[in-house]
Amino acid sequence: MMTTLAEWLAVQSVDSGLASVVASMAAASVDIAAILRTAPVAGQVGLVGRVNVQGEEQKQLDIISNDIVVKYLEQNPQVSILVSEELDEPLQLQNQGRYVVATDPLDGSSNLDVNVTVGTIFAILDAAGGLLQKGTAQLAAGYVAYGPATSLVLSFGPGVVVFTLDADGRYVLTDGHVQVPQASAEYAINTARERFWDDATKGYVAENVAGETGASGKRHNMRWVGSMVADVHRILMRGGIFLYPLDSETVSKGGRLRLLYEANPMAFLVEAAGGKATTGRQRLLDVMPTAIHQRVPVILGSAEEVARVEAWYAKG
Ligand code: P6P
Figure 1 (cartoon, helix red, strand yellow):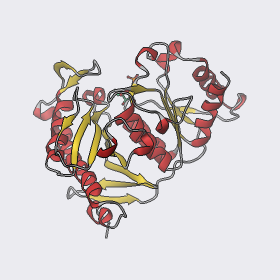
Figure 2: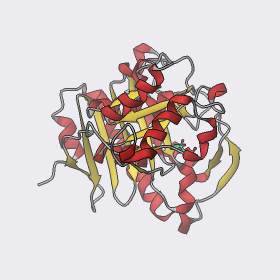
Figure 3: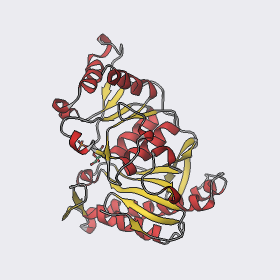
């Protein structure tokens, strides 16, 4: 008999309110998954003719997904504030709620029109600490990958687990102990940006391209889905490294990916699974946020590979 999410949450040594917030995000993801499966049939595709605070064109499904998350969280008395990629300002929910949720309700939505895996990413923080807390302060983090299977990946800190949506619409435990392999020969980076890269990124990637003849001494492979949830899930499942480093084009914005609801939850999960996460120059979870939509460089995955990148940055 498979363990359901509700059964698993019930035996975790965490506050029941915190567990209820995870359950609310999971319930929202079940609705989002159902809509994604038939969106083209329902005509729920394409742009809505608006850009979000990130300056990115919003898709119908970005808005729909965000609305679903809001619907479930506003029904949960434990949630006081929602920070969302799709909302310019924080959304005040329950005055007495103990928790803040930061989310990218539909990450990678540029892939929707070509039917590639997208996801919902979320972090849960203690409201008493305010909105701008280091990643180390996260109480829980997770994502849902809407792929061939719908996978909910979750951690409260020690350990990472995976639930899979079954035919009855319930999340059942399918991996109770995710560990990122320490070593890997697979890297993920948008190589079309090479002309913008710093010397550390150029040096690291050149070593990989050199394969057995280079400093790494092994043949590497490259994967880039263009959907962070898909790339990070692959890395959690079989190892690898994901890089979206600061480059000459993104430096003015602080990076490409958002700290509170992309980088921090993913870094939390990768570290909880035995991997590492850095900006190149500091541990990602130690970055002190200064704004809710702040961007940051992201390098995370197998510890040995992340250490190689950090060594390149340490060269100056
Ligand atoms: P690029 C998706 O828009 C996203 O925020 C991440 O999910 C993904 O890793 C990255 O941007 C893709 O960036 O440069 O390939 O478009």
